[in-house]
Image (cartoon, rainbow, N blue to C red; front, side, top):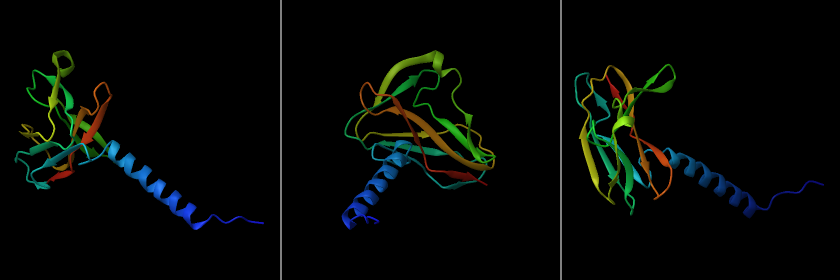
Length: 148
């Protein structure tokens, strides 16, 4: 004799799967509950500069390693090529010049214009922040944007 799951068990299991999927999306999330990283446009012409806005949406500081040669929150520029995301630019030798942790304070906004010459293609920006004191770095991405 086959047992049939009660309706409330099916609903609970479905809700649990949705919550797990949502949590995994937020782990490497775009504009998740901790941080928002947005470009000023979705489509650019080659030669245009990309303006980035990073907003701490968390009620605690988000920490990052300050790289003195870069003098800011060091991004990694990712390009979609051959079916995968590759790092096409990041500040050189930042690991050798780390000046300690700095904080992006609660609800603080960090603005930057990237000084990088983009070729045609699809890109996104990658940042690393520590969300909880003593925690591991987490990866955050901007929206995808295109150069035509």
